[in-house]
Image (tube, rainbow, N blue to C red; front, side, top):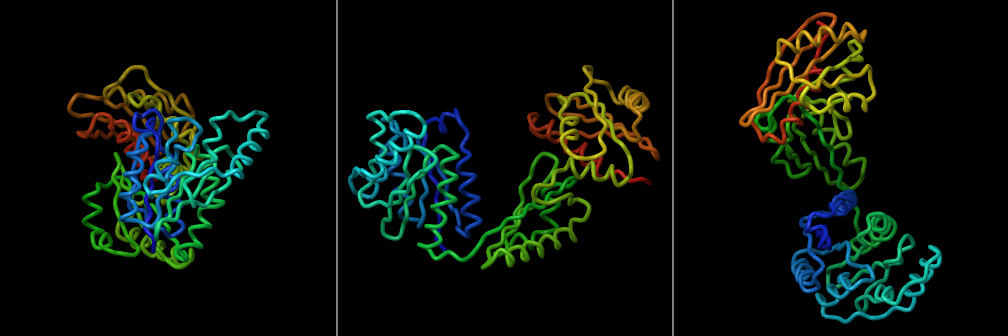
Length: 383
């Protein structure tokens, strides 16, 4: 099974001016093709440093994918850097220049002389036509390694990856396996508690199981490699069922399922209609519930921050004036060392008050509070 490496190129990424979304896309595409991704890195627009990063990759991997640096300007050095890394010159390809001119003509523009730089590629490389942009791609086969240079524009990169590069990789490396991942979402439990219950599963080699902790929830990632999609899905389902058996009600969904949708599913099951009144959360609880499908009638954001006694009174008044069957009142008090969250809940069967404290990073307190509130709604029962 070939190993892969991604090198994103661009000083603007290193300076934080743009976010690198290309690596995420490529990582998922390689995963689904059954290719193991072992390294990712970002290099600025410097020919020598790019060449050095590629030389390092040549000694440890079979597939190197670069994105960016294929434009027409002086600070687009990827072509020269790859040629330098493998010890060849760049060469002019007339057919690439014709393709570039045709693209510009289609856009109603004339190419400038510096656009001709894009018709140069490392000697001996395989040119890849770019029908959705003006920057041709190319592949350099060096010993057992394929160096694949893709544009940095996400739309162009994604098109070429799906329509050309994956086909090339399947043929060259005779790829047969697929890699599939499933995320099992939990809430109301800490990472260490989950680890205690599923530690033996985390030692498996295929499928593999790993934990990713967030503020107020933990994801369990299952990754399976198999000869077919059906076999991989069966392996994932077997581990998911085992996780549900061990973790019980802490599991609220998988993959794209959200905690807010699980919360409203519970409100729907109870045949209630929910409203919320919130303070200290910036209106985000109301927004999350409004964007999910379910029996949510709306919310109100308080300008003042009530204490827990005042919150109970406000919640009681709010449910009466909004003709709902359930209401959650929330107030997050932020301090220097800890954050206190007060909840007041009224349903047709009970009235509750709860208080929680959070001592983690202050910047994470809002996300912690939101997840705790949503999980509280998810677990409400009729009796």
